[in-house]
Amino acid sequence: MGVSATPRPVIQVSRIRKAYGTTVAVSEVSFDVSEGEVFGLIGPNGAGKTTTMECVEGVRRPDGGEISILGLDPFRDVYQVQNRIGVQLQQAQLQKRIKVWEAVDLWASLYPKPLDGNRLLEQLGLADKRNALFMTLSGGQKQRLFIALALINDPEVVFLDELTTGLDPQSRRAIWDLVRGIRDRGKTVVLTTHLMEEAERLCDRVAIIERGKIIDIGSPGELVGRHCPTRTVVLATEDALAEERLRAIPQVETVMRQGAEFTIQGQGDDFVTEVIQCLSENRIRITDFRTLLPNLEDVFLKLTGHSIRD
Amino acid sequence: MLRGLWKLTWLELKIFLREPLGAFGSIVFPVLVFVVLGRFAGGRITPSSLSPAGFAHVGLPVFVAVLISLSGVLSLVTIISIYREGGILKRLRATPLRPQTILAAHVLVKLTLTALTMALTVLAGKRYFPIQAGFPIFGFTMALLISTWSILSIGFVIASIVPTARFAQPIGAAILYPMIGLCGLFVPVQSLPPALQIVARLLPLTYAVSLLEGILKGEAWSAHIGDVAALVVVFAICTALSAKVFRWE
Image (cartoon, each protein chain N blue to C red):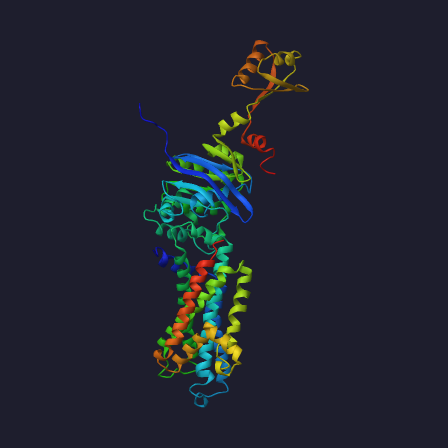
């Protein structure tokens, strides 16, 4: 073909630092975000995710380092950048007695080429809340309104900060579908979350942040493969020879037995296949078989030595 | 530059009027004060016994005007601090809205409410103080708007520094209300002790009262250029100061 298909970076962050007094919130953070991807900043509360994101949005000025977004400087070109990005801020509110349509109408009036506010409210399931006061909306409805406001200017990059924090599981899933919808429209999405499940379901790539530093960047699959290569198979059998046969598989590292249940760990892409072949060759009758895949939660635990919820 | 100003102003006005206590405090209450004071005075004094420059004719309208103006300022201080504490300013900041636009919208809302309250007060006052042919409604309203505009800028500074909405009202009141005692409304500035005279000369309310009283007595605007200039200077200093210390969150 001869044409490189590498997507161009929409955001380039290079060695940014930010301190509040003597507390260093972010130090030496660097990453790129490509066009059309969903990029996640993940880490526990207070890790520096929001500060990093607000620096890129131009809401906060870093003490040092370089940021380029859509080829612009978020501070020097702040008003140009604001026309091309959409922002949902953590802990932001609107006037208690503003009506839903009034907020959308005000936001639409601030941008040169706004989308149709009524259609947007319909798409976000807020059509019947047009005349409701902001203070009467539920948590999920408020977040959907904030998504509407973030999308009203048809932005190229959308920033979503702790979008589903405090929402019930059902609203959370609804919001996830909306975020996938945003990505499907070809927009670049940058989000922060401390929910590993959310990151796994939504993000093409994630940066793990801990104490103001990025520990690693990659797709969830890459990170798991890199830091938690061990696979686990759990099976149940009454076969007396099973333990001996399973230990004979070359990739197997440990076999633990609890009554009739075996937990087998090993490495390599063929590990699970090898276990299945061993079972079938030896005609071992099993009553249960499942694989436990490590996830970002395990990666985080491995990298930081503590759970993200601590 | 001021994209969204009219829409935001109209919106803030509607939002303000949806607050039952907000509308009561800034519009109904000053009118009530005026009516109650008017009844009290009107029962004992007949119009013919009033000297043209007496309290009921000059002092009372000016006093009510000052109350309207101060309640506007306090309400601005409270609203800005609620907006900051609640993250509303933060959300507005991440839009193309300029900070000046947001403040300007709130000032326009307050000036509109001030003019509205003034008009209602004058209407209510007609029963107790028949308006003489020479009552300078337009001039007096202009003087009040200029005064409010200037005092509002002090409100900006207070709004810029008070940490939470809970403290905004008491701190604002503690700074603004003592001015009433020194502004020349009840005791002429000339008869204050020298030290207090200096303080009075530094207070913008002193110039506001002088301007309002003068216009009400039918004096020419040219006689009060100094008052207007002082009010403009206060506005310029306070606006510049609040731009420096203003915090969004």
